[in-house]
Image 1 (spheres, rainbow, N blue to C red):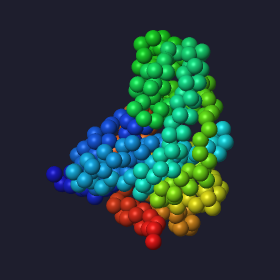
Image 2: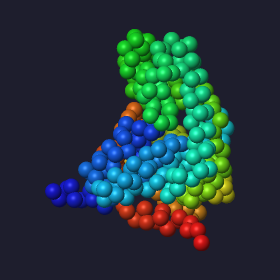
Image 3: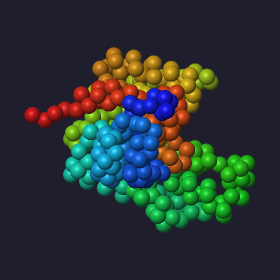
Length: 310
Ligand SMILES: [Zn+2]
Ligand SMILES: [Zn+2]
């Protein structure tokens, strides 16, 4: 009993549902959040806001605050992309909806090309299967999931990987930027992504800088903050400071680094597990499997950054 109540009062500002590459429906996610005692969640599906309305209703029913959110992909060039989180956006904003529709179409075209590349490389996968699996935004884990779970691919996979790989391993080898079946696609620039979020009334936050802007040199983490400075000039409001890296030690180092940077640059500090519940990305909902927890004060700081129209 005591242990259960000790979990209460925490939040998770970075989660995914079936409308991008998550495993749970919006309702399923809110029910799970209730079960583990979370006070608030933000569903930040990739380039998609379809979960928001349903989640808001379920959240109100179960007493969990749902923060309308999104995770936009922004490309700098073919080798570099960022994920920009938008919080407290108006999910019905026309401009946002129109843009998201364009991004969905572009993702679909890209996926068709990647499927063709995978076929050429000898893997069995059909675009219709991808369409069926992805309820909303098509993302790399959908393709990887089909490949690694299809019996016809086992022999080839075992030959190459030694065993059937995890979706994450397959993504790194075949689908990630510059990998064997990779195809670039056009997407928003960081400036456009930040503006799109602002126009929809939201707060723009750089997702997981500890992965995108941090390299590992042996055992040492090497931070490159030059991009954050550029993004701040474009209007970035915050950074996702409370996020994970491979282990506790590196996570602590990242938090310390980005906490200081955010304070210096007067950026809001957010945090979340990047819970997917599908494939191998992120941690458990509410960091249930990790030492890190996000207190409600983080949400209050974020809320204070919402620009109220007068
Ligand atoms: Zn992301
Ligand atoms: Zn994410």
